[in-house]
Length: 293
Image 1 (cartoon, rainbow, N blue to C red):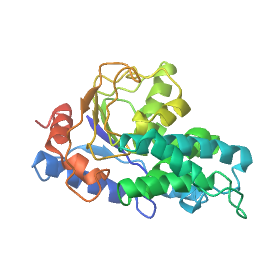
Image 2 (tube, rainbow, N blue to C red; image 1 turned 90 degrees about the vertical axis):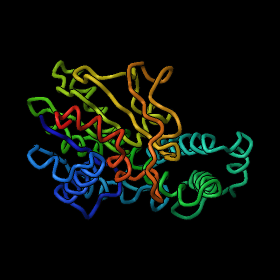
Image 3 (tube, helix red, strand yellow; image 1 turned 90 degrees about the horizontal axis):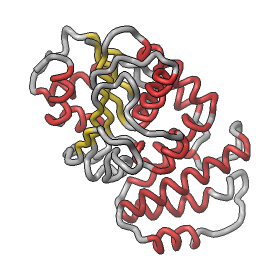
Image 4 (cartoon, rainbow, N blue to C red; image 1 turned 180 degrees about the horizontal axis):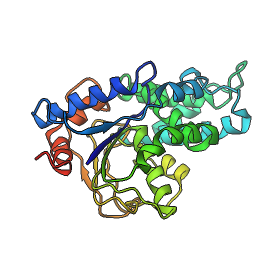
């Protein structure tokens, strides 16, 4: 049995080996068995630098006119506005507060900045008022999710890194985090549609933005467990606003997905991967699927 890790955003400057070692350490902490994975094949495809370079002019620096073109920028702005509004509502903002934040943004076009940027900055500001530091993280995750889903060159480049690992023969447990859940889910659906489903006894998604309507709209349905996946566990910390405090369940998703909604990451960032992997509830399910328990 092989273990496949699929990472999310903000991993630039690291390496496959560095991430693999970090994830293994955190998972072994959750299993409370240091060295438990020592004899296991663990694969960690790395696209962190690639994604960073391809999206460098993206939302971290504002929504700018650039290589993506004005049409892509408009689509990105609409995607971000919808997703940020949904997150703000989930965090307790009323529809009136969301509308007021957008309406209060000054009009006009700043030099070199796409007009929608001001609305998005207003929504980020609203998220920050609801919970400090969350707005900018949301913008980074969602901006790179949009680039992956809607810019063909970005999607192809990332898929080319991750797809070979999923196509490898034999069973493997797939554990994905954040944007990595979107990448792995889309590829698992693609392989199933080709009639060559991956053999995945367990698929684990952690802190997944698949719950967001904007992400679902960009992916396109139907939404359910891909062929080849025997069991799907989706885990979230209730304070992880990227995943929202909701599971992958009807009516948005088909039934049959096991949702763990009470993960306590205990750190300053409830979206971070270490707390998810170190959670006994998550680690036990992975360990059992790997034959370690």
